[in-house]
Image 1 (cartoon, rainbow, N blue to C red):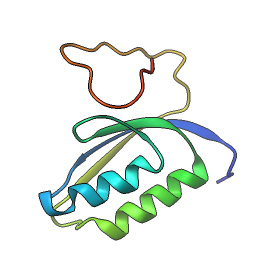
Image 2 (tube, rainbow, N blue to C red; image 1 turned 60 degrees about the horizontal axis):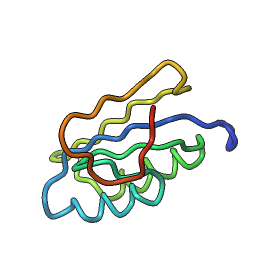
Image 3 (cartoon, one colour; image 1 turned 90 degrees about the vertical axis):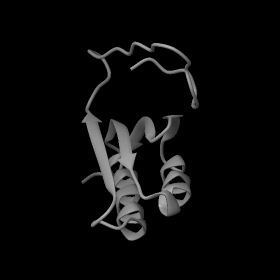
Length: 93
């Protein structure tokens, strides 16, 4: 993978409570926190690989789950928010 190629990533996680803060701390180095268990942002392929490596080292694969939605472009997507907008910066997908 090339370092310079970027993608837009939405990360959703379900982590055992004792590891949540560590996982959030790792993910926030690369992505923007949106709300409980959801982060998103533009990231290079190399940084995405580093994020996955750090998460793989921190999670318990028998108990935890991390899901990534990968978008090559945000051109044809949109976001609708109902209720309170939490965390992160205001971004339109």
